[in-house]
Image 1 (cartoon, one colour):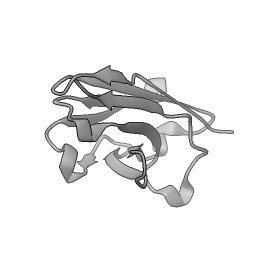
Image 2 (cartoon, one colour):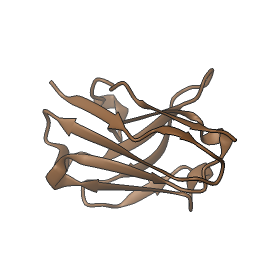
Image 3 (cartoon, one colour):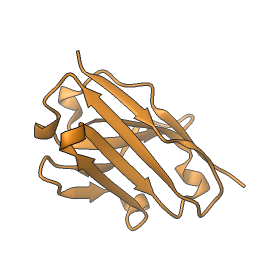
Length: 116
């Protein structure tokens, strides 16, 4: 059974930074393209960043230049470095495989709140 454990969220002022981590257990992590997703209140979950098994990255337009996704296959971990945070980045952040046709069970997510 695959388990996803996200961490690193919190309350931060606009312009601040956070680094999210997601540890994956129970699967061949290194072979999977991974994604960070977020869901704001009243909105659908959206993909914000993705990284292939060999490190190629892609971002939704609203976070380009501010967020950086990376992975450490030795640690079965995917990261999301978030800089220049804006109030509209407030959401619960989740990780999962990039292509949700093959989604693993969702973790609990980590709350990111950007507010002064």
